[in-house]
Length: 380
Picture 1 (spheres, rainbow, N blue to C red):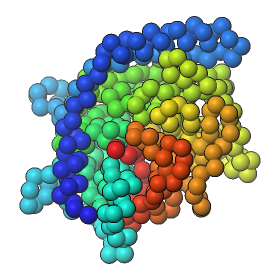
Picture 2 (spheres, rainbow, N blue to C red; picture 1 turned 90 degrees about the horizontal axis):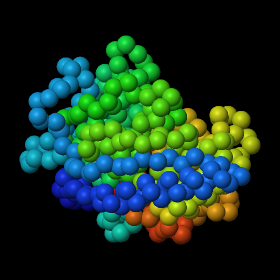
Picture 3 (tube, rainbow, N blue to C red; picture 1 turned 180 degrees about the vertical axis):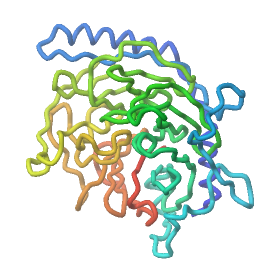
Picture 4 (cartoon, rainbow, N blue to C red; picture 1 turned 90 degrees about the vertical axis):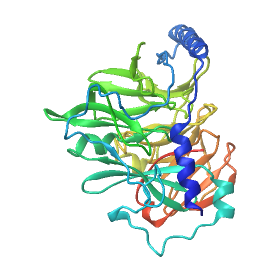
């Protein structure tokens, strides 16, 4: 696998700008208000989450000299290649050095089956390390320094398009809240966005698309536009255990104890009964991902990797409440719905790739260095 290509592609991901149609966002808000009125009059009442979104700009490291970070703040650091400038660190991390026994690259398979970049999260004693992997080529993209461990470890996450990294920096006076921080994957610098953000619980940081981030401040949910660096006004709603599809259209949540999936015009309530033997070990199950058409959710346990999607083990059709039989054998570590419609089923040493109808397209062997790490997201 050509690692130069990986470096260039990741740089392109960081520099792309995706304009957002504000009229479309206003229409979505209007549709949301309509479905809220409809649901309020039905027997199974569900309160919809409504939020207008802000204008998307490419998030760059702060260089205006305003509100500098404290000297002990975690920051994104990247070591460039010694031969040419690169947003990806070319040398391996000390605790995850590449092994000669790692599965060999197979361009004929990995490029065709999973041509985008997978982002994995690992930790050293001093840093949170984000790996960028294409096929079986693994390189370090970004490091975030750890101050105290609780908040950063529990919240660091990458946006669905692979451009932005966000986390909660621990506060000196509390282990429960901190400062919302954000930066660009593969670039230096970080921006201080919002104080008093919770870093524990079942939903510390949740992406709604690639620009908006839902955070919790006490009992209040806040939607923050990371690209525009401002809070988005709107009713946060009363839903719990929320997650969105990769494009931010479909919301999976729970209201009055009833799980559902909805956009601005459609609502699907569904039921799921987890395996009895496993269920007694946990505090319940939850949706951890939503398909691009809103028809399917990936299901996992509450409390596992709260800011990330890793940890789901099955898929439910929300229109029928039936479990989908995945074409894999062995334990499933996570199921993720990608923005291009593909479904990534992660197992012990491989990622099995399915189409939107859950037919197998192929599979990619994971590099040995990342097999025990958290799969944050896949950017097509």
